[in-house]
Picture 1 (cartoon, rainbow, N blue to C red):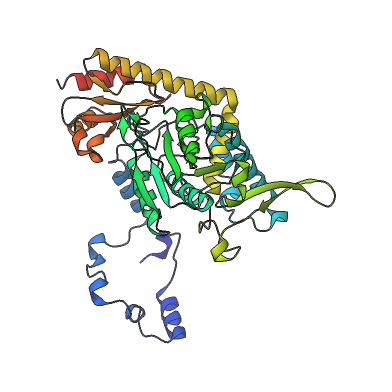
Picture 2: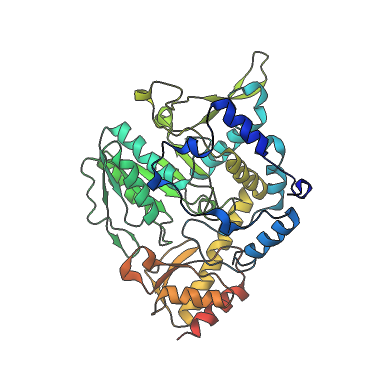
Length: 448
């Protein structure tokens, strides 16, 4: 091996021998002796091939990457929780400053003021969007934040029954159900009528909370005010999972009666990547502040009266007695929260509103174009940037056909609901052009 062909050698053969001798074993295999043979990987790594010089390796990996079909080269109409939105160029320039991307836990506030202030600004902007009193400095993602919200509601109300709208994202339902197993919570689901939560037969008896999504999984706008009244009349908390960009134009959950508002900050500058990582937000009324999971950054003054920021009201199990902890979440998504903060700051409150309006206009144009081409819009009604269309044929087939014509289609709903094989959840964000939408309609129209 020519060592000059590699810029990073983690360990030489002599290093390996020295380490094995120090810990008193003869081989790497001896370190694996506690793992049963049946659980060990038996295949040889020889198929990977010999090590390549850096230039050849980069060339090889680039060829593999070029086989991918992605949103930089294909217009995407796929949403369902992970969206293709504008990311201001200033975001990456700020985010990739070394003091941000190397930061970890700001336990020493005297050397972490920059990161702490960034977290505080994130909390502040989330509170402004949701009209809630307090927000934490982020969660792993929107779905786990929603599951944590059911924990908080159950701890607050001392009730173990969680009621979830049937129009909540199917993957969120799965995570809520998984979380519920630990403390022994029961999870029930409401019916869905015309694409929204059915309020005519809503059973909230002994419920700790009612969970809804806004806009919901099918893209529809829920009547939060009515749902909040029903939840509160039953003594349950009202939990709303909301797309924060939509709150640039929709009435906020806080103003409509939400006790807890959670969601995913991905629409604000966070890349789709392969479905993550992302950043969840979690906001509550002031009365629930001390049960807020994760980290909370507070603003204070030092002994000289200068403004400063600190981690405060920490109720995680690593800080207080385990039986008193509100959550076992032990970290957050500070870097992605910073990306969202930079994006929100760059757009400004009027920019966020304009961006939200553009989403509504773009999706409305696409919906009308599909209707004009003879396709059926399922459960038509108020929506943000997603809606369900019935193509009258297998939606997976439609998706493959679109890909062959250089477009990424929406989500075939048969993925989650067997009776919806011909239906697709289509998303049109502010990045989709009239030409791209017209091409989409032309391509699917040609399949008739």
